[in-house]
Every structure is written in C-alpha cells, then in structure tokens.
Image (cartoon, rainbow over all chains, first blue to last red; front, side, top):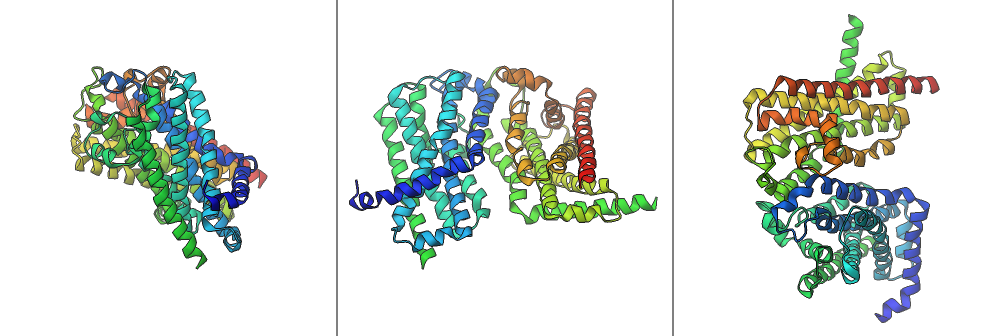
Length: 258
Length: 261
C-alpha cells in the first residue's frame, strides 16, 4: 500500500462510511441505479432476444450476452451519483469545510470514489440475482470475480468523472451531464450485438470506445471461458480511465481551493 | 360564447408558457429529444441486423421500423415532462394563484396539455426530418407523414393527461419523475422496438394486446406499409382510451385538490 494512503487510511474509511450511510439514510436514492439497469436488462432480453439467431454472439441466450451491459450501466449510474452527491455537498458548503481540513485532496477523492465502487455492488447483486433467475449462464468463480472487478472499476472511473464535473459546475443541475456521459459511453459499445453485426457509425465508435474493452472483459465469463487476451485490455482501460479522470477531479479540487 | 373565448385564450397562453418553459429548462427538453435520439441511434446501429431475421417484416431498413418507436418514446417523455412541470407549478404555488383567478380550472390543465401537444408535434416533425436525413422512405408520402404527426400529437396529449393526473393527485414533481422507469416498462412491453412475433414470452403476448402497440402501429404504418382503416381506428381508439383515462383521473384529482385545499 502507498505509505501516504496507509497513514491517511482512517480518514478515507471515515469518508467511505459517511457516503455509505447515505444508503441507510436515503434508501430511495439507490433505487434509480438499481431499477433502470434492471428494467433495461429485462426489457432488452424480452425485445431483442431473437437477435442471437444471427449468430456470432457466443451464446444462444441473449440474457447472457446483455447482462454485462446492464452491470456496467448500474455501475456507471452509481458512480455518476457520487458526483451528484458532491455537487449537493458543494451547494450546502460542507465540501468547503472538508477542503479546509488537513486531509490531503487525494484522500478526500479516494473516500468518495471507494464508496462509489462499493455501492456499485448493490445494483450488481440485484442484476445478477435477477439474471441467474431468468437463465444467465454461470460465469464461474473467476468470470464472476472479473465481472465484479469491471463493475467496481467502472464505478470508480464514473465517480471521478462525476466529481470532476461537480467541481467544475458546482451545482446539482449538472447531474444529467454526469449520468448521460456514462450512459453514452456504456451504450456506444458492443452493447446490443457483437462487433461484426454493428452497423455504420456505431461500428467505428464501438471500436475506439475504451469501455468496449471493459464490457468484453466483464462479458467473457458469461459467454464461456475467461482468457487473458480478453482480460488485460479491460484492466488497462480501467486503470487509464481512473488515472485520467482522477487527475481532472484533483485539478478541480485545486482550482476550487485557490 | 365570451366565456369560451376567454378560456381558449387562457389555454393558448398557458400552452405557450408551457412550451417556452420546456425550452428554457434543459432538464425538461433533453429527455424529449436527446434520450430517444440516442436510443434510436444505438438500437439502429446495434440491432439493425435484425432485419435479416426470417420473421422480420419487409422494411427498407431498421431505422424505418424504429422511427415510430422513437416518436412514441418521445411523446411519452413529453407527457411526463409536462406532468413534472405542472407538479413544479403546484409546489411553487403558481397553480394556486391560477385557481383563484376568474378562469375555468379545467382550462388550466388543458393549457398544460396544449403545450404538451405542441411539444409532441415538434418532436414528431423532428423525427420525420431525422428520418429523411438518414434515408427513411415514407411509403405513404406527405399525407402519411401528416397522419404520423397527428397521431403523435394526440398521443402526447393523452399521455400528458395521465402525467397531469399524477401531478394533480400528488402535487410532487419527484413522484411524476419517478414514473420515468415505468415509461420504459410500457415501451418494452409493446411493439415500439421490435415486432411482437420476434419478442420473447411473456412480453410477446403482452405486446400483442398492449394498446400502446396499436398507437405505435398507427404511427409506423405510413412509413413501412400502407394505412388501413382498421389500423387507424385501433390507433385512434387506443389514444382516445388513454386520453379518457387521463382526463377522467385529472378531473377527479382536481376535485380532490380543490376540496382539500
């Protein structure tokens, strides 16, 4: 562990616990992050289920193909909600007091994004329960672990994105931008069909969209075997997204404190 | 007669205010245009290969098929946005001030619905233009396009009346906003995105009897096939049914609100 993080770990833990308390204090706030991906998962399965007849999906069960998208949608929404919460704290003046405290800025950011990664497990648990109930293939322990890594990793990146926007606009009115950004990133991938079936602009965008790598890493266990070839690009993408977006968020904190 | 003219002026003024309000607040306008456009683009690009499935109806392209779904999605969201705006007016006390003004109380709700109708028409025209730009063929020509705009406008009023009823009953914007996921449940259980014969059970059976599917078919027919009397009648009856339900519930909610104060 980074020595600086080790020293400040109790502070990170307190910030994580504060964020997690919101689940108990405002349970309704967790509902959109759970409900929307679940409705989309069930709806898309029912509507587009026959697409697998086109071949190339790696499975006959569309629900096994689409579950990865819904897991990432849930983690994207939950992560972006961290930005909304931060905007609320900024509006209420609480964040100013936090910035004036002796806590280093990376520690404050770590507290927020770690809580987002943990909260993303709630929609993931609901989706997996619903998914297995309607016939999603068991991904195996390693495939499941990779799916959880993808969910927590994307939630961390989404939280950094949300925080960067919250620090830029300093108002909850920026919430749609935080959520829409993640929504677009997750959907403009191989979300509905494998790359060979994508048409026109979506084929190009899905090829260059880094979240496609994360989706394919998360999806592989549900479609069959897990390979390092499908795994490392996803892990690398998560690391890069978190590094870049965290840098933006930290820059926003610096500007706000100046 | 003078009363009718006065009420018509109230409806027109409140309708114009409703449209201006939607364009001034991006959070009300964005769901009507951005969200359905995004889904239309992604679903057309992602699931476009579906036209190669053997049971898929004969169409020029998947976008031709999907356009009606995007229009109906947009007018459902326009109705919901209208309901949210009405609830905000109730929360802020603006509607209470209108209630004490010497105008018909129903004109106040109709004014909001007039605005929703205008938004429905605008969104329908927007999607027609989008379709033209991206190569959709309108089989029934200009007359068919006019019919599509008419159906979408009437449907926006019908869905808006249901949202207005919820707003009047609860008086809370958050409750009306909470209906957002339900809109997608209703859409997924209709033929908005895919033909019923290719959907999975039990959604396929629900979609066959869902009145929204008849509205979607009414809007879709001028694009992909021909308009038939039976299809038009089913679309009209479904819209009328939604409107009767919404207006009836709105009247009840209004009476309750005025009784309780």
